[in-house]
Length: 279
Image (tube, helix red, strand yellow):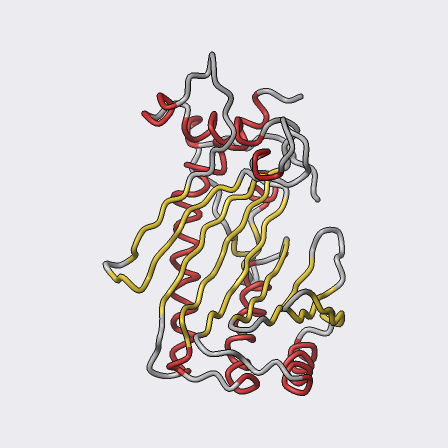
């Protein structure tokens, strides 16, 4: 994991929130340096969720993964987990990519990419080729989603950090008597619809990995605080050719919501709370 760096000024200082991506002189989009100093790790994942089971025979899986590897030569590690086959790249200084096939889902991810376009290229390639290798039809699509994920390493109680950052100054704080009670879980979750379209939704989620769930008292455990923005479009669709446009809408909504809402309202406050009382 990347070490948490120095604090980034948030909206309270008068600075605008840092953008998620920044265009270089060549027009390429890179992940803004301010984002990489805000959190320990950044990742961008995609999930294609289907109604019917996908072919999981040896030939179908190897043909699909072989085609992906031709496009992304670094992805050369084939692994099998419980109920899942995966193709992965080598972890190089915390940066790697993966594709995983389960019974009704095909997921892909890019961890600490150097640019948004690097992650988008992987996901667009999966959307383009998977219907032909897995016999996916327009009726079969349950939903397509993108997840913008941000991890924060912390050396003290993660639920306390989330509570202080996001809930302490809200009416919800009155539910807890801090003098007599100990906080055991604080994991906010909010969902919204986008563009007045019930099939296009976004979900903001903070996962503290509470000690209660881990069965460990106090702050023991090494899981980070994770913040997720999930943007989802529900199927079915009329044509497979509509998938690129669906992906573009999800990516556009995701970048906007991260820049305008997630960074100033969630990421910066959590970062500030982590640094306010270091161990």
